[in-house]
Length: 151
Picture (cartoon, rainbow, N blue to C red):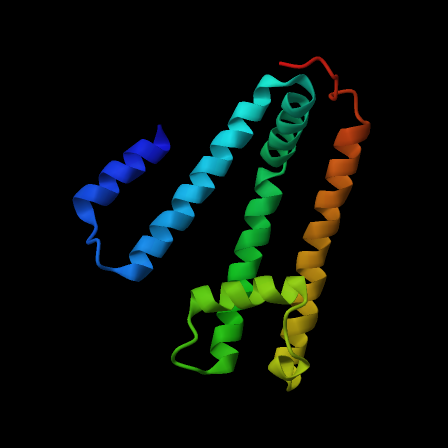
């Protein structure tokens, strides 16, 4: 249903000669198709259990995930001021901090005293959030909330 609504909006509001917009549309459409397949996997007992477990964990961890996203925006915005580049905005800083957490950065990006302190703070705070998430997932798996009773 969401794909049909998306196609109707596409036909009404978007020019068809814009290649970048078409590429974005196709990527969103593919994402919606795959999420629909995940939704259909709820029909089977083992996958229904796993999807329900994953949804429950994400629901319980919503505040921690929210704080992690806020901290990535805060550190990214701070880094955008330290970088002092007009083309490097807050969203670019968020994406950069996400890349830092994944390990895709150069040590020269944090050269200097204040960027070095920021780097240590980013790793400490966000890895603390990640370790807390892992502990929460482990505790949830060991608790009595995980019955295997299907739908």
